[in-house]
Length: 395
Image 1 (cartoon, rainbow, N blue to C red):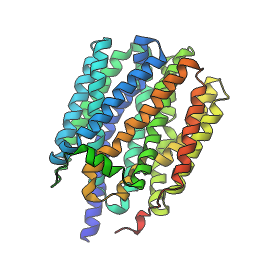
Image 2 (cartoon, rainbow, N blue to C red; image 1 turned 90 degrees about the horizontal axis):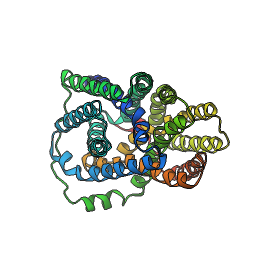
Image 3 (spheres, rainbow, N blue to C red; image 1 turned 90 degrees about the vertical axis):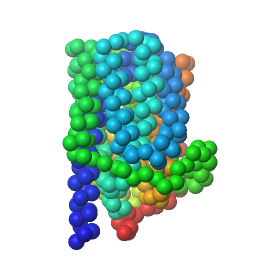
Image 4 (cartoon, rainbow, N blue to C red; image 1 turned 30 degrees about the vertical axis):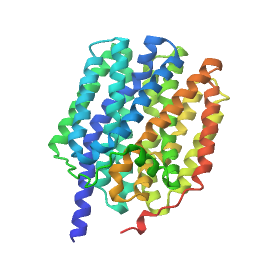
């Protein structure tokens, strides 16, 4: 009976956490939708946007590592609230001022505190999940997140076209405020503090990458943001370059989320019961093949349709890869290793941003798809060597 009550309590808490996070993610989706074309309005050069974004990503990777001791010794929600406040302030400033130097400074700050937010939230979800339900709960959270990334681009695209970028930033700030209030109302807490604090970052990094299973999961997780770099950095700029409006950018970024909303939760449940490997392989292989097909088409609507279908592949990987990571590490390793694991977010974005920026210096846009296809095919082969995990057999 106590076991059933505990399970129900954790499920209710996951729903509250997910609802509160939904508000934040709508704000982030508004911001993300216009970010690359906002930067491009200063430079009018896709490669420059790519290189600047790479600098932000490097700052994010470094901060992931240096936040590890802070996360271990501090109550998680205090740090999470701090990151929300930083987002509110930054978006509010963007809504008032438009200056390239301000963009660079705030871009760096946002990259740093994004690292803190992502790490804290992942631990929060895992701490409120039973071992048998990690993949399923991650599916719930990512379904809500993807719902936000369906709503956000539609709103951002319309507002950007009708009223300009600054109103989008202001509305994004309001949604972040709503998220902060929601977390407070639901009294969501995570006061767990590690007994042993790890200050030797170099030792932690070596320890993390000493296990092949963790390295493979890291590469797989980086694949998700590697793909999103194409969708959120280069495709929007390509759409604008072809003479289309910001509204089409928003419509595209909203549409590609539909497969994730429909399939991410079912795939999460399936992975927990049947295993992860086949989903990982199929997801990466689908992305690789669709990217290869995109190389042969120049019609913008055909490309957008193909990238929409590719969302099925991402749905197989996004939430399940994080659940898999938590399944292969011990509870006492979460605070220490999760920050390093999350550098895969920026590492994937780095590869998906930096190398296409170089390609675009010399070759037309469609050659970017060849690069993505090759990398994703190699990762699909890697997934075949990963250890299988079946959550339903766990206590």
